[in-house]
Image (cartoon, rainbow, N blue to C red):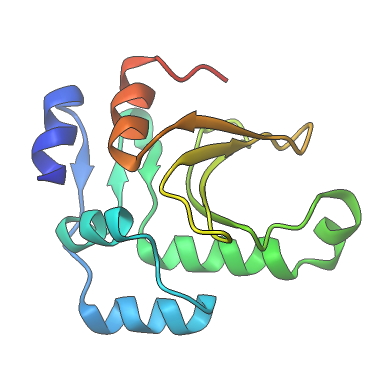
Length: 141
């Protein structure tokens, strides 16, 4: 489903081999909770998706885990930004801004974190809409 949806909008998208249930379980244990189901479904088809010019439309699971741990545990970030614990980053805009689900309380909507203002703004009601709208230019940062 995800490969077809993305390929319809971005023929040049690059897909990776899918993740395993063991990798998902390890990620959930490391992050302290399961990933949102739509993201899990996508990662089971492709462990990350690259758009044009190598842009991380959806990061591989390893990067999702690493970046979220980094943002939640970096003491310098704690001094200059609001807490990142409520967010689950899964992609970037290529300009420092990052896309995220709200981790707590759980929401399937997608938000963008602006790295300059530390604002968090709604951009799409679902992962599917985020992909469609980001690739077609409807999401403007």
